[in-house]
Length: 332
Image (cartoon, rainbow, N blue to C red; front, side, top):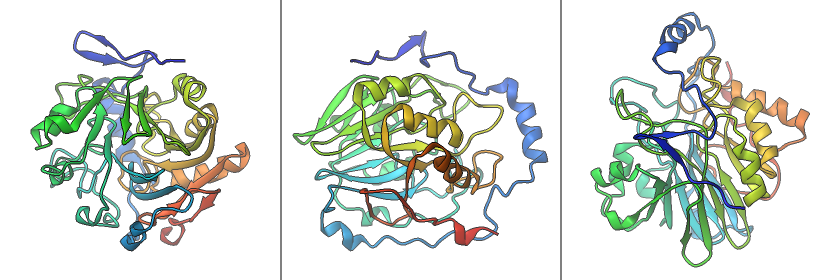
């Protein structure tokens, strides 16, 4: 089964089904909701510090699959002899400015300079919480190849990544890393843009990462969509699904899932273990910082889903269900 490529209307990319992106018409009710919001959006206790023991990277994972969650959707994935970094964001804020905008709850657990050698970097789309200018600039001059959604390469080139290191991918496109690891761009239901203009003029994607032994799904950002079942049919089953569970809100149900839809997506994808991401790092919606993971923990019991919840910065082999409960000590 092959997936259809993306579609455009003029300059703008379209979602697979009609999607309300919570544009300017929703600004007033969203503002009102934030003003009246009483939830603990930002942790009262400082999270962390978390620190990665980088000596672990000197030995490959015995299982062939190891995950280091840096925070949000920044993940170091060690899979079948290759190392892939997703949506690397090391910046203090996810914003057009270094002085305003959502600020991180905890410092990255390792420095960019402490990363082991990488075989690939994946960039799902161009929003600030997934594409960080200063982080990308760190890799300028390195030989690390980038795999990104169509159009995102323009940002990478502007920030010093060489053209021959960039592979822009449409939905359904595949690229081989080394000899035996295949990365395929797949649909997600979201939007793009880094300002008032240029909205939806670059593509957004999820990715299938398939090695000789392991098969994982990196969902990046997405609302609920029929694509999950189609991807599960075409590329599943998955040893691990990496799915966003935070930043949901009643005024934008089409572009972020929240724990209920995310857990349904895991089932539709034919996933074995589910790793929640996109929570506990930045305040991007009017829900408590811990609500997504607490809610998901309850839902997983009801839906018979096995979770994989590593502590930030802790390289963890993916073998069986695991919940570090890392956030519990920071509840007020």
